[in-house]
Length: 479
View 1: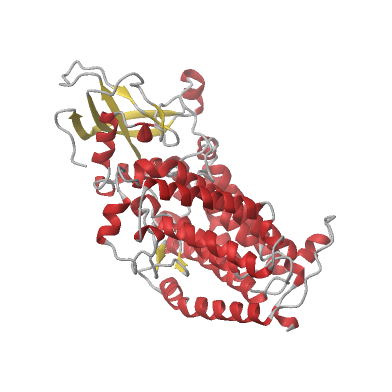
View 2: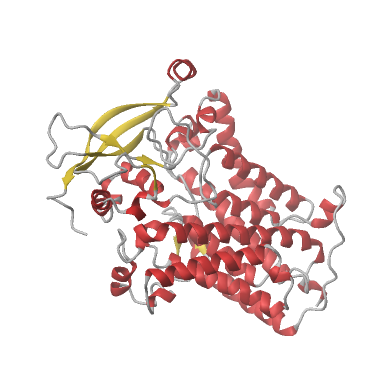
C-alpha cells in the first residue's frame, strides 16, 4: 500500500498536529474561564434549561446526560490538560491506536461543549475546530506515514473555508465587487486589534489592492491546492501569508490560525528541506490494515456528507457558517457577505441611585475587547475568544441578537455577580453593586492622525439613542 501514505508530509503533519493541540488548549481554557456567567447553572443561557428542551439527537453532548458547573469545569480543564499533553508530543509517544483515542477524546469533549453553548458558541470557527479535530484523529502519528486521503480531505476543508468565503463576498455586498469594502471593514469589524486603526488609514488605492488580493486568495489559490507539487505548496504558502495579514488587522479568535495550520498540511516537507536545515524525519513502519480501514471509512463518510456543503457552494442562496449535522463533521464556511458601513457600540452604565433622575451620575463599565473608552487602544486577544464582547457587537447591530440574554446580563450587573464581572475589564462599582443600570447606543468612528496627536483618542463617539432603559433593584428583568 505504498500509495496510501506520503512520508514527505511528516513535517506538515507534525506542525499541524502540535498547533491544533495548542488551539484546543486555548478553546478549552476559554470555555473553563467563561462558562459560569454565560451557560452555567446560574448563567444567562443555562445549559440545564437548554437540554430540557433540546433532545440528544439534535445536540449530542455529555451534558445531555447530566449537568453541573463542577462537571463542566472538569471537562473543560481536563480537555485543556489533555490538549497540552498532545501539544508536548504525547500522541507521538504512544501506539497508533492510543494516539487516535487521544484525538477522539479531544473532539468529543469539545463537541459536548459546543453543542450546549447556544448563542455563545454559534461561530464558524467552533465548527471548523471540530471538523479539523475529527480529521486529525485519522492523520496518524510518527509510527505511520501521513495518509494521502486525509491530506486530501484537509485540502477539501481548506477549499471550502476559502472558496466559500470568496463566493459569499462576490454574491453579497456590492462593495466587494467594486473593491471598496475595506474602506469600512477595519473600522467596523467585530473586534478591532491594536493595528486596525493603522490599517484603516492606509491609502484608499491600497485598500482596493487589498480587496482584489483577497479575491485572488479566496477564489483562485484554493483551486491550486489540488494541482501537483510544487504548485500546491506555493498556493498554500500564499494562503498562509494572507491569513497572517488578517491576524495583524483584527481579532478573529482562532479562525485565522487554524486556517494557517490546515494550509500547512499542503506543504511538501521535501521542498522545505531543500532550503531549510531540518532534522531527519522519523522512520515510519508499515500501515496496519485496521488503520487503513479506519481511514477509508472516514474518507467515505466525509465524501458522503460533502454533498450538502458542495451544493451550498453552488447555490445562489449560499449559507455561511452552517453545520448540516449535529456532529459538525462537514460544514460550510464564509464570512462578511455584507459589510457594515457605520459602527455602533452598546455602552453599559450604572448609577449608585436606586431611583435614577436626570441628575444621576452614570459610570461606564469597561469591556476587555470591544471598543469603549475612546482613548483606549484596542488590544490583541486572538486566538483567545472573548464571547461576551463578540455578542455585544451583534447586539449593537440589532437588539434581536441580544433579546435572549441581554436583560439577564444587566440583572447580573445589578447583583454585582462576581463571575459576570470577571468577563469585564473595568467595574465602576468595586465596593457595592449599582442601584441601577442602563445601556445606550453610540456611533463610533476612528479619529484621524491630527486628532489622535491632539487628544490621544483612537475613537470619537456620538450618542445615538437609548438602547435599554434603566433597570433598578426594584424593577429587574426576569432570569
